[in-house]
Image (cartoon, rainbow, N blue to C red; front, side, top):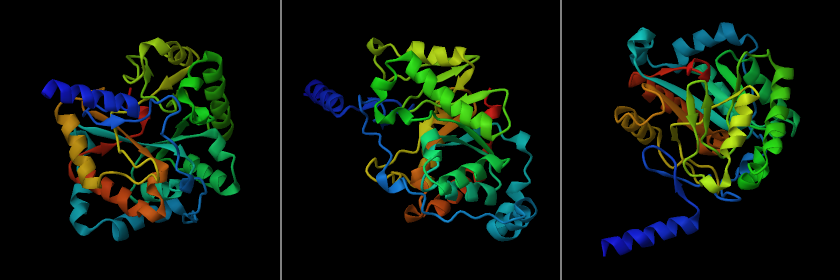
Length: 311
């Protein structure tokens, strides 16, 4: 009976297009042919009014100390960074979208570094998105990185079937970044819909992609062209219909602590957390949710870095 149940369960997941991806055994729907991983339509307009103080750098410290951090947390803030053996890399995908402005504002208010992987065609769709993109570029706390130009147009298997197509798409986004910001020694990249690593000392393919599709050579070609590709250790999963996250910040941190303690991360003492900009819209109380996550992680002794220090 148990065997029959297991067989039925396996078949149901195959038909649903779900595969094991996250190290904690949770499922991801990234790897369908034309995946149900779709950016929710509600996230496409950037509706939030994005504003930062004119003298942001002078004002930020006062805001953090006097307004944003309760007195109980001040003593934790001054704890020497080197005493923490665990580092978390907050990463956000698919911007600029509705929710991106809230992310930038919260990171500034909480004085917390993060990496934002942005999509070229999203940047070009309207002045408000361009403004949010530029604000991220101008913020020293944020590393803006390459998340392809088209995001595979949602057709992942088709996209990764052609090496020239993939390389051309990623290079197009790279040209935009190099044109808009100071050129960096490392070209940081995350592929659309794929949990892949191509780093000097790390070679990791998405476990949900069947070998018969032979995508590995495309990742290798990108690495040979100078791109360092970063996947993730854990995803803050969401409802694909609207982008609302499935866990509270407290529940999420519990899961992060679990994979960390069990050694289920790509590198010891380092966790890359994948999140999506659309999950931080005003209608989801995005700023409050992200601030709460950061507060809990700080309380639990995590230090924050951009992916520039992951190597």
